Image (cartoon, rainbow, N blue to C red):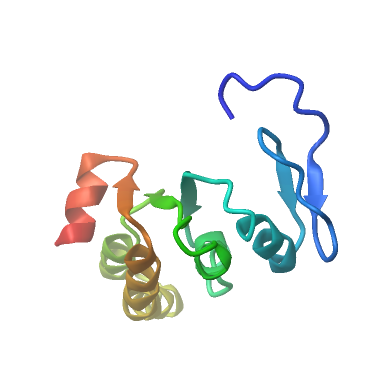
Length: 142
C-alpha cells in the first residue's frame, strides 16, 4: 500500500471478522477471513508470491488464489499477478542431476514430477506470471 498513511494496526481476518475498508493492512489467520475480504470486491489487482519452501505442504499461492477468485463478486475479479521466486521445476531437475546422495537425489526427482502440475495450476489462475530473473523465466517456459 504505497503512499497510504495512518493505516493503524493490522486487522486480523479470521472466522467472523468484518473487513475494514482499504487502505488497510490485513493479517490473514485463515481462508475464511480471506473469503470475507474477497467478497467485498475492493481489489483491482493482487500480487501473490509463489514458492515451495515448505513442500510438500501447499504454498500460499495454492491456498490464496483459489479462495480469492472463488469469492470475488461477479465482475470484480482482480487482476492477478504471480511472482515466482525460482525456476522450481528446472531447479529440481538440476539438483537431481548434481546430487550424489541417493536419498537426496530421489527427493529432487520426486519434486521434478510433483512441482510442474502444481505450478501449472497456480499459473492458470493468474493473469500474469513474473519471475525474479529473465533466466528463471526462460527456464520455466522451456
